[in-house]
Image (cartoon, rainbow, N blue to C red):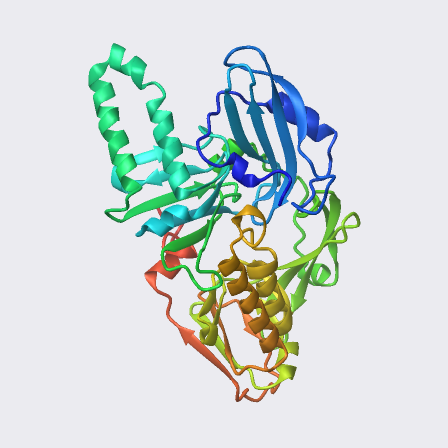
Length: 458
């Protein structure tokens, strides 16, 4: 069992005490955040004496720095007071802000949905449109809980000052009491309701209990942050005083290097960027990051051209193990489907990649199995682990050429590519379809509000 169970931190959270100074003291002496490992006897929580803000006696704060996949680095803190038995727990994100914000929309239909695990960061806002209810960003500390836990926490927050309201303003107290009853009734799921978590930092997460299959009740949307989002998160956009380079031939022959931080250990690293022309396709931008500290390597691909007029759907029938060596370009807007497994990987899940078909399947296996936050620790169940392990074995069989399946790349922006080994002749096992995007797809790409003709006219 993990020496510091995450279940210790779930449930109702009272955030009157904030161990910020204690956390800063602790972090300064612990530069690395290890993965949770139940066999690591050295990975114990650090206990620091702290002041109780309830009785003003001395209590203790327990701190644990660790990493959770999809949530990156976190600081888990728990305060207890032996004098008045007052407790306070919270989770703070210590990782980097993601490149895009994330919006989760969950249709809660059954009581089983109330048990979905939720990682909610400080910067995330929570809404329930049916009740016109919203918890603004930065009004609660980050938490690892469930849907039911989020509702319980909201109820506890509203009930906290009810005695004072009943004495000073009975009318308002009565209205809030009725609203609390409506919140409590949601836990019975007598009627469907919608839960929306909007996190511009991209560090929140809602569990998909059907993984690796697509979750029909959950919609995940990644979006580009607006300037007001960056201001709230404290991100300053750097101004580039240098004149832009207009010589494309020079840029094509040059590898640009700029400083960044490793996405795994946050150590200083270098990112290389280069324009590359893909034969029989188009020009793309490849970015690769190598970390000398933890040896982590990553690459990302951005389209060097405009959004195509039509979307592209590429279907490849795998008939030979040699298909695994086909070059593949998956843009950020491309989703991957394997119909025989009833599997769908949404756009932006793996980002943009320039790899081989084998590399893409291995990345899918790592994302669904190895890096799944609910495959280890308290969140793991035998049925879920067995199901995901079986999916990983199925992916291995596909890579080995032991299964007859189809791989579908569906890119509404038309910026994805799969190598035709018979080029310039048609590939008998590959089908490329062009289609007109739907209004919803144009909305996701931000094209509906884009004016490309006569934009200078008033």
